Length: 82
Image 1 (cartoon, rainbow, N blue to C red):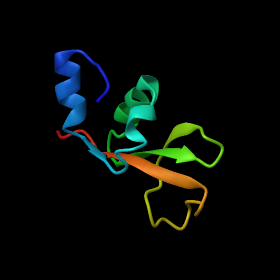
Image 2 (tube, one colour):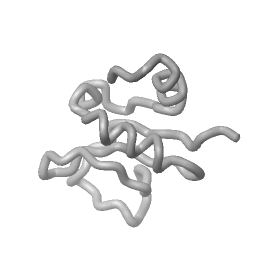
Image 3 (tube, one colour):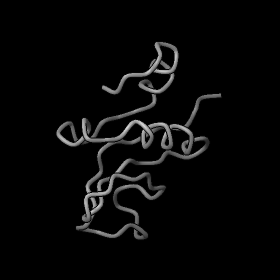
Image 4 (tube, rainbow, N blue to C red):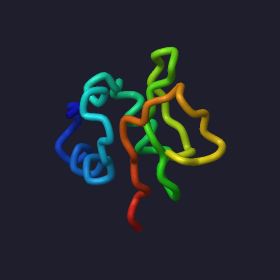
């Protein structure tokens, strides 16, 4: 798991569901923070693109708007609870 302050880690980790344990350690801290911020209302996903870049996307697995075969889903980030 990435290193954050204790309060920040508790707020983030209860919203993250790791889908690929092998790729999870390769996710940069700034991408995790971007995903946590981006999932305000709807979930978002951290993915590894075919070119090796790790990014945040808003379309989940199975979405017709998501390209197939060139991305690997690493984690799902749930929206903040009110």
